[in-house]
Every structure is written in C-alpha cells, then in structure tokens.
Amino acid sequence: MTFQTQTPPSGPSSTEALRAEALRAEVRAFLKEELGSRTPAQRAESWNGFDTGFSRRLGARGWIGMALPARYGGGERTMAERYVVLEELLAAGAPVMAHWIADRQSGALLLRYGNEEQRRTILPKIASGECYFCIGMSEPDAGSDLAAVRCRARKVEGGYLINGTKLWTSNAHRSHYMILFCRTDSADSDNRHGGMSQFLIDMTTPGLSIRPVVSLAGEHHFNEVTFTDVTVSDEALLGREGDGWAQVTSELTLERSGPERFLSSFQTVVELARGLRGAPDAAGTAALGRIAAHLVTLRAMSMGVSRLIDQGEDPAIQAALVKDLGAVLEQEIPDIVRLILGVEARQDDPALAGCLATTILAAPSFSLRGGTREILRGIIARGLGLR
Ligand SMILES: Cc1cc2nc3c(=O)[nH]c(=O)nc-3n(C[C@H](O)[C@H](O)[C@H](O)COP(=O)(O)OP(=O)(O)OC[C@H]3O[C@@H](n4cnc5c(N)ncnc54)[C@H](O)[C@@H]3O)c2cc1C
Image (cartoon, rainbow, N blue to C red; front, side):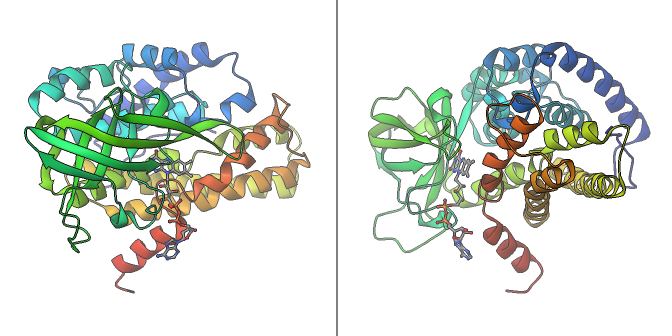
C-alpha cells in the first residue's frame, strides 16, 4: 500500500506536495536500511517500540523537530513534509517511542510557553533525538475526569512545592522530563478548571519516585510517579499560573490527531496484503479494500487537522473525531485479519501469528490512551450542540 500527498483546495501547494513526495523516497530508503531485520512481530509494536539509537539516527537526518525553528535546532519544514515522515515511520513499524512525545507535543509546548533558556537548551536536544518526555496528566482517580487532579504545586519562596501522584505515565522511567499538569489553586477552591498549571519537571529531581506498572501484555511502559515535597524553581512553570486547563486542552489536540491514531494496527494490514498476494478471494479483496478506504479517509481528516493547527487554530473536536474513528478501525483490523487469513495469534511467533498477537494485546488500549472513546464522543457531541 502506498501513500501519496494529495492537494485538496485548502491543502499544500503543488510545489510543497512535490517536495514532500521527494522526501518520502528518502525516508523509505533510510527505513529499509535501518529496519531490514525487524520481524513483523517487532514492527507490530508500532509507536511503542523504544530504541534510543534509532531516535538519534533519525534526529541526525533532521526528521525530528521538523516544525521547530532553525535557531532551536529544528528543520522549519512544512506540515506536509513532517506528515510524510510520521506516516512512513508508522507504516514501516519503526521504533519511535523514545522521541515521539517530545516531537509530537512537548517541544511545541516548550516553544510556546517555555522561557528562552529552556528553549535554547532543550529544543535542540529534542530535535537530535536525545531528549525524551513523558506526560504527567492522569492520576489514580483522575483519568477521564482530568479536572479532578489532586496533585498540587504550592507557591513557596522562589518556586513551588509539589505533592501528589501521577499514574499510567508512559516511559517515565526512561524520560528526561515530564510536563506535569496539576493544581496551583488553594486547597478549598471549587474552581474546577481555573486553578491548574503546567510545569517542566526534570525527572532526576529529588523527591520524585517512579514505580513500574506492568501492562496486560506483560510489558513495562507505564509507571506511577510520586511527588513527595518536590521543589522546583519559578522557571519550571510553563505559561501563566492558572492557565493550565487551556494549555492542556490544546496539547491534547496535538496528541489526538496524528497518523498514529489510525496506523497502530498497520503491520497486520501489511501482513494481510502479503497473505492475500497472488490468490485474493472475494472476501479478502473486499476486506482489504474496505480497510484501505477507511485509512485514506482518516488520513485526509488527520491532515486537515494538522493544517488547522498549522494555521494557529485549536481543532479539538476534529481531533477527537480522528482519534475515535481511528481507534474503531485499529481495533477491528486484528479480527478481520484473523478471520480472512484463518490464522491464530501466537506470541512466540516472529511472523504473522506473532504480529497478530502483539496487536491483539495492545488493541484494548487504543480506545483508552489519549482519552477514552466515551469521553471523545462526549466532546464531539458537545461540539455538535447535542449536550
Ligand atoms: C497505553 C496507555 C498509555 C497511557 N499513557 C499515559 C501517559 O503517558 N500519561 C498520562 O497522563 N496518562 C496516560 N494514560 C492514561 C489515559 O489517559 C487514561 O487511562 C484515560 O484517560 C482513562 O482514564 P482512567 O484510566 O482513569 O479511566 P476512567 O476515567 O476511570 O474511565 C473508566 C471507564 O469509564 C468511562 N467513563 C469515565 N467517565 C465517563 C463519562 N463521563 N461518561 C461516560 N463514560 C465515562 C471511560 O470511558 C472508561 O471506559 C495512558 C493510558 C493507556 C491505556
């Protein structure tokens, strides 16, 4: 299956699209060389695959931080070029997780709300694939209801004193920084959205402890991160105190709209196409055609959201739509492949059966991570004026 950068009326100019397509060939050649020995089961880890060496080599090519300004080590490339790199990485099953969060959202946040010193020291390291971030939003009793967070930063002389617990923090144990979302209002305040702020937390700060939480697949991605009298300076505050809710909502738009929201099961589609090659029956042809039609549509929607973000808008509802529809497809794909090819999942198999097993074990998380299905549908319903 191949992607082409089309040029819808409000899309990139034809020169931009041509430049993006030229880049696609370069990225494919790089990935072919880099990932030649990666098995289908390994590729099926999709954007959960973690390999700091790969991230560094990608950074050296200028394919991380592509939208960042050149003075901070970025590439100042177009949205279309960045999108090409992202989808090629995902389509190839490249191990991108080390740099993914920093590249997708934390860098943009620092660029907008960080101070000059933070931008100057951290952004170039993000772009070179050497600096990794985790997301400190969810808590034991605050996931869907993010406004219920209890972790609190209390203003003290010269900085803040932080206490509380974050949960499901992906890769906290191998990240350099966290963007923490917490309360900064007084304990008795009943202002649910007003008293929140975001902080840049160095993961080596004293008082911060990280405990592994093993997933249903038996893997360690998640963590519980506890803050016990953690002191940070005033400079750690990102943006303005009290503006955290608006900031975190636009961060979630970045988190929900990219191609990783519909390509997590893509390796099983590759295996389906491979399995049908030469002798596709009617059911196989129809299944592959239907998946391809969904992918093409989702891609157009996701690129539309990227363009709106690029134009300075905050398309939160459109991003929720991409993620919700994307997760429905991603979760359907393993079942379709299993039925059409008549193969059972097996974790110890490096080929198709292993690819299927990896995807099946990850699939329940597709409609949880980044906001659950019910919450996204609530956002969409509100956007449509239905609630
Ligand atoms: C793979 C993965 C990676 C993650 N990584 C991170 C991370 O790095 N950082 C981070 O901060 N968080 C992370 N999360 C946490 C994720 O954001 C939360 O799991 C998610 O927001 C749901 O919160 P919860 O687990 O507390 O479930 P709950 O909020 O308790 O929800 C439980 C169920 O109730 C439903 N529900 C809740 N409220 C409503 C409502 N009002 N109406 C209808 N139904 C409702 C939900 O849809 C869900 O089905 C990750 C999660 C996963 C699965």
